Amino acid sequence: MLAASYRIAELAAEIEKQTQRIDNYLTSKSFPHPSFDVGGPVDLSLPPDLKYSRAAVLRTTQELNDLLQGPENLIFNHQHNRLVHLKLISHFDLANKIPIHGEISFKNLAATVGVDRAALIRILHLGIVCHMFKEPRLGMIAHSTASRQIAEDPLAASWVGANVDEMWPAPAKTVDALVKWPQAEEPNQAATIPSGTVIDLGGSHGDAAFALARKYPSLRLIVQELPEVVTNSQEEEDLDVKFMVHDFFEEQLVKATDVYLYRWNLHNWPDKYCIKTLRALIPVLKRWQMDLTMLKIGNAKEQDLDELKLVFQDADPRFAFKGMMQSEGSKLAIIEFTWE
Ligand SMILES: C[S@@+](CC[C@H](N)C(=O)[O-])C[C@H]1O[C@@H](n2cnc3c(N)ncnc32)[C@H](O)[C@@H]1O
Image (cartoon, rainbow, N blue to C red):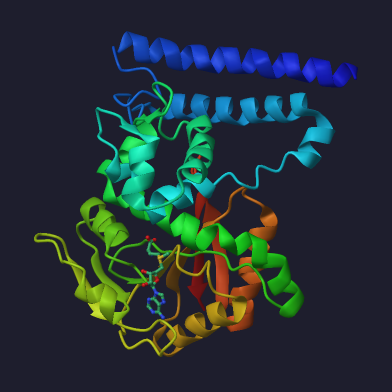
């Protein structure tokens, strides 16, 4: 009892301290302060040390919230409907049906998309509680900063779509899948870095490769992807980044490469597929070759790293773990394996 009340006071003091730092910085730079209003800033442009403050506030407010809810609410308060409004917004492209600086009635919005008005209002009220849209006056809906971003930034809209269509349903099936396939494991995620030639396997439209090429102009980068992705990708003038159709489960054909990069592209694959893609590299690997993998580790758990090491060992014991680097505040780490 005593410990809990001490903890909430401690958390409150930390929140106050870190929030004050952010507030002072924004005020001293005359930057806009966070707001849910439609004109509010999308990005606070904080320097690295204040990004740490922000992360600390987010973490401590969550802990304070959980503590004050108490164990009973933590058990009963699941927020299982938390994403339903985003699903509705994404499915009917609602963000683009509301004027950026105006308002529209729920009645007209429901008629535009052809759904029941009462149901639409109930679901969107959930969104409004989460600061997605606003109800400036009874019966009317308008944009908030967040909903405006969905309307104006196609990447944000796609991200929401991918989350509600693919990510959201997945956790509900995870345990069933584990029961059905007891050997299945959550795959880790991987990527690469060095000098010389880098092959970015499953490198999508090349964003990471372009960033690497900009930072290290002497690198030669090849993005290997599925045909439909390559068709829709564009090389950039002045950057040594080429696109190549290649299925990363098939034998690697490009020799004389220094690094094979897996970045965020093994997470959907069970271990046996991770092993398959690693083994597909073996015919062209050179001794001492660097193979850096980027692993998504939400809580930097040692266990994730151990799991990844096992995957590499299962693929071939000649993959040797060299080390892991993780920048402060980053959820990603660079993990290096060499071929010996
Ligand atoms: C989650 S994305 C990661 C993209 C990129 N590496 C990044 O970090 O942003 C996974 C990528 O793997 C590609 N991919 C999936 N299966 C593949 C395969 N068999 N061969 C090559 N690429 C594949 C997909 O097209 C997709 O672009």
